[in-house]
Structures are given as C-alpha cells and as structure tokens.
Length: 95
Image (cartoon, rainbow, N blue to C red; front, side, top):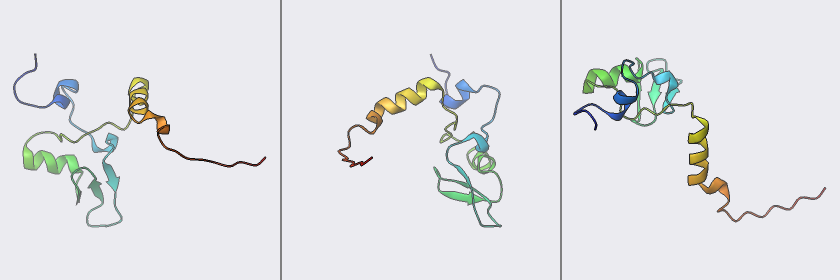
C-alpha cells in the first residue's frame, strides 16, 4: 500500500532529492543568462531546474527520468518498440 501524498519517485529515492544532471530531460543551453534547461517542462533557468521546480511546487520534479537504464529496462523498451522490426526498409548492399 502506498503512503498518502508524495510521488512515486519519493518512494524509490527516500532520502535523496532529484538531481537534474542524471535526468534524461536536462540539457545545457547556449544562453549565458539561462544556462540550464528542462525538455520535459520546456523552460530554461539560471539555476538547476530541480531547484526552480522545488521552489515553485514545494516538491521534487515529477518529470524526472533517470538517464541510466538497467539491462531489464533496456530490454523492455526494445520490446515495446519491436526493435525497429515493424518498419519496412529495403537496403541494397553490393559487396
């Protein structure tokens, strides 16, 4: 049974805050005023995006997705996309 309130991320990472550097959606911009960005929430910031989200919402970012996948997660994602086998691509190779 899940505890009331909070998010799923809090249950998996009980004593750690979200770190944007390990998130899939995090990117570095070319703008000197706003060097950090979040693709999921579509904004750029002078601070790390997780700090801005925490300041506004009062909780960790719910769009956080870890960059590093385990072997099982890679296999699951490959199975969902059918490994690209559903495309009809013909390649002619002459050796």
